[in-house]
Amino acid sequence: MPGGRLTQQERQQIAVGLADGLAYAEIARRLDRPTSTITREVTRNGGATGYRADLAHRATQQRTHRRRQTASGPGQVSAQPYGRDAEAVRDYQEALTTVFMTSGLPKMMARVLGSLYTTDSGSLTASDLAQRLEVSPASISKAITYLEGLALIRRDRGGRREFYTVDDDLWYQSMVRSARANDQFIEVARQSVGILGRGTPAANRLENAARFLDFVGEALIRAAEQGREVLYTRTDTAEDGPAEPTEPAAST
Image (cartoon, rainbow, N blue to C red):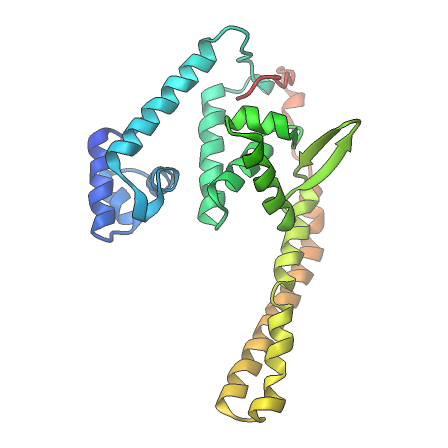
């Protein structure tokens, strides 16, 4: 299976495949590439309906150029905690961002979340995020508001500074929130019996949907409660090895 970055010819083949309505997996098979590579490429460059091979290729060249400038620029800190490879970290962060986007998050919100999750502290200020992602503070503010509304991040105060944080328990809180998201529909659906008539096809359909969602929601909450401790299970950390954490102050 070929490695390395996608060529311009491969991007043109991706564009043709999308125009033909092919699934990402089929495009990947024809190019002998991982499906995740195609998914990340398309999601990062306009999506299935907005993908343009020439624009995608140019954008990749620009990103590569910016990375080289950052790596060689004066005053930039290239060291990574635990001896990590800086470019591998960037690529991984982009892959994680793509996963968040595929699950439904808008691009900027996914980038913010990806940046937070790949930071050892799990906590950054708006200024930190704007610097790392090379976007305006207004974009960060909008993304933070959106993510906070989904209980995917929380705000913390540290002196006069405000930090945006992801931690283990947020996954639990988000799962419970998702499980409760259908409560209003369940309540309204159960009112159908008195209005549409018990035993009628319409009332049965709504009542069955309410019972199903209620059952699944309660099962999810029980599973979240039972599995909550997994979020706090610690594996062997890199601190046990020879490398010492040296979190850089500069943007990655």
